[in-house]
Length: 319
Image 1 (cartoon, one colour):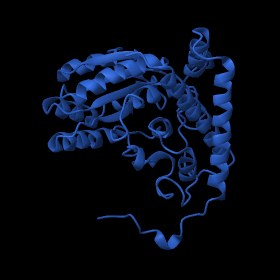
Image 2 (cartoon, one colour):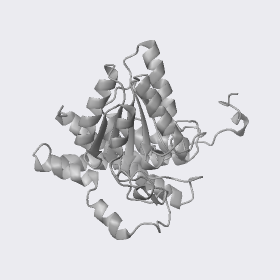
Image 3 (cartoon, helix red, strand yellow):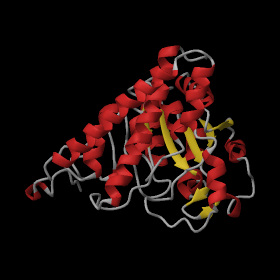
């Protein structure tokens, strides 16, 4: 299915929103305003946006420690997200989650989880609930290549395939699990081949091409929604920044990063839209300026928001 012009513009808008949000979050971290780490999603925007725009609002996603992009792609408010990163009461988790456990429940996010691969079983459980309730809903767990050798990953794919659950497993291969190159821990270079061990389709797509991601995601989502079961969707991408903001990055050469930056999904999409005559450069520049203003206001909202009241420290804790 070819996306129409309004959807193409929304793809651009959401990718720019993620990029500008992450740049602002990294700046706040460098200024010492963020407690804890920030794991930027820069370079992988096309994966989250392509997948999430193939979903309905009541479909659910589960993220990783690098999930600002996933939440924003699903429609989360940038001001509440920014406030959450600064640990403020107005944050999407009332300041309790921070960067690595951020969630936006009103837009269908089960939350980010810092333990590698730990969001996948949650999404499978949600999919089981959908099937039991006979709901036409789909769950999408995101994981990086670092998660493919965890027990959670294998057990979840196996259970979802045996029970024919409405799940789309999205594996964003950015080639590094912290500092470990995927080629050092996995012999098969095409990670989508792992799907065959569970009897489900495996699809490999260019993670810098938002339209390609969207089209393959939509096919997998529709299949799951119609009772066809799970799909493994592997998006081949790359993170342009370090594993976390301020990381030394001694494990990879700058020439490698520079080569991947040439495939940046945002300018790539900008040129694709303008070269095809679908929009003018000025229209996309206006969208970029609008998003930059939105993010600037989100930063001010977060900075000026109150800290959580220490008297509420035991709220939302269950046993």
